[in-house]
Image 1 (cartoon, helix red, strand yellow):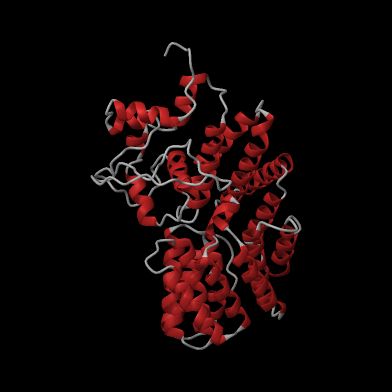
Image 2 (spheres, rainbow, N blue to C red):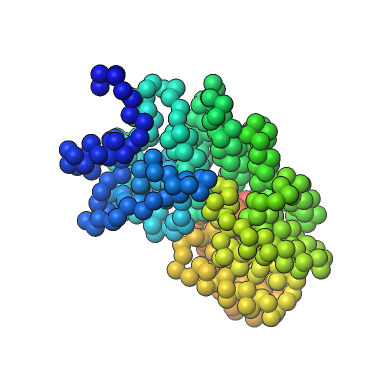
Length: 427
């Protein structure tokens, strides 16, 4: 208060708060985690930082106050704070857990604690302060946005993500050299996601603008692999040879060694499209992807690689075997994929897995089962307003086109009407 010293570690504030026995609302105003979660205390758990070393200087955020109101979705919460919490936890947060966290972060409840780090930083050293804690805070928030993308519609994240990018842009001006490359890398990882969300929201000009930002950030940070993520996202909007070319452009940005999670992802995407084109090289690419995945550390490599767990790999295997027409492998991979998401609320991934199972069942002639899983896929895609999930149902739509079964015809009509709201039908 007398301006004689500057506090740089939050554990000092934690000791002060503990010594004064501050109530949770007061702790939250300081940017500290509350101590009680629905009346049950939990011991703190160290959370590794981005580079794998303990982030002892950061507060633990494994506890949040859960209010009496639990929203049906997280669209009305303080997304910046939610992204930071999810990124600091840096573990898979299913929909139920995320909504529990969001229940304490509704717009009304979060207004006095929104962006506590920014408010605290300005109070301590002015608006231009930049230190290790602040950089790690921004890195965690970027990871959190990538994790939230699995669950929330693009429209619920887009505005918060652009605010996050604006803040990164401001801090990059005049940033010390020791932080500049890290901030640029974080901005690039955020910009690739912003481009993807803008595409999902049918804002092509904004998507292209964020692509340019990610390219600049990749160059400035010395992390060209950011461009690999950009091209991989582009491939989802393409089909056939065009998609394959985008994936191979992405692979050109891979380093000779390391980044095996991104390598496995790109190999899986390549195998999917090769299988769709009837190219037997798809099986070899899948084998290479499985080897890369065995070496990978998705939760320690890049913000965008957090999605690549055993369940997502099983979904890729299922998709590729479906396209190769390998019924024996389809059965095994389908069961593994379903087991991986049993009880999970990750509706975007569910939409893809259900669509692939539906396509496989329709190929082998089991129309009732195919229709059942296609219905589930459509429901999951609609819940998250996922353009990606609906596009993945394109092959199911084509498979249904020749069937005369009433349930199949009704489903086909629903698919066509839903997809027409997004664009032309592929069938």
